[in-house]
Image (cartoon, rainbow over all chains, first blue to last red):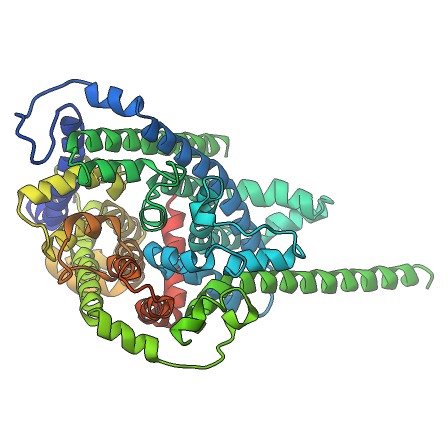
Length: 298
Length: 291
């Protein structure tokens, strides 16, 4: 049997060839190219010859106040959006999972923004964020605070711009997380809850001792995915604030793209890309360790 | 007799509590859903309003209730920009990535899951390693590479780099791994080769995997903004997400027109989503299950 299957080597290579060629040419090569370029002085259209400059680009970006601010902004984004979005998604998933009538309608409504491209979300929310007391969000907040709200120019205010970007990002991404967590909830066997309730566990204790541990893998997946997305933020920033005001909303990707396109500094942009990759790698490895630990315990 | 009374009281109280819980459940969901849908409703209503009333009414209840319905914003969009062209570009690019990707990635996933061959392990590790690389981590050098290849301002540069997809390969791999072996073994005994087994036995059983892969790939690339922004300068090849952002900055600023553009951009996808929503939800849930 084994020998007969071994005869599959040529045909198997034929089947994987298009995928392997594509992945090598358009993922692996650019990835290695990023490391290589980040150690050079490459600048498109520059008359200087290409030369190896060692870690100079890294020293430059890490001492650049705008890039430092970008790292802080991405970190703040992650630290706020990941817990807020995950708990909202979990709360909605739990409400939807109680087996009541009409839940499909609610699920559809919450999932809808997921099919909206971020560029579209940004453009629609720009109008909602319109400054002045007649702006939609401003007047809504004025109504629910019974007139105590001071109108804000959300996207032009150094204090409000980043939160404004976060809110629209959560609005767009929540449904995706919710659906994953809902699937996780539905795969928890009912017997676990029955056993817990026979043992006298209340709702809260069932949530802590049955729901959360059983949801560990989908939760870890959702947290890591949102964490990585938080460091990828670009579209909404480029469209709404161009990183401003005063770098209040600049991000690692925004700095990289600006360096590469507005200033043709490909080497510098490549170094930023590598920093971004190291962050993604750290988050992913943290998840792998977390999930493995769980498997050992189980 | 005596112990029956407290029993009944308890069950009545329980029923009342359960009813209150259900009511609270619906109430919270309804409020959340209203807040959630408001921006979408706002967008649709604004698109059907006379343009000059969009901004003044944005802060009142009229933002969600059209006073006078007009389609002039829609006509305006077609007069000011080539909406049809952008839509065509988006459909062509995303359609090609999805269709081409299904072929390329399902074949690779099948070979990795079901065939024994030299190099399988190495290729599998390679695919797993690349799964963690988002486009953003390679966008700058990939831009440099495709510029060297002379691909700027084409459909090719928006399609070809994304056909092979490590995540989709893994999705197919996981699906094929879970299929019962007997299916192919029966075909092998009948003397069918790998190719015939694949086409006649495997593919007809793999519809859920194809649906999940098609939907996740579609969601990944339909809204792509960063990449077309980098590699296209000509509007002949620009897709919708880029076009909507550009349209917003096109003077004169007319929010009614912008919202009409937005509605036309999302309506086809929303219809597809509503029709196939079970598959969308399953596709996304399947992508989460691997975690």
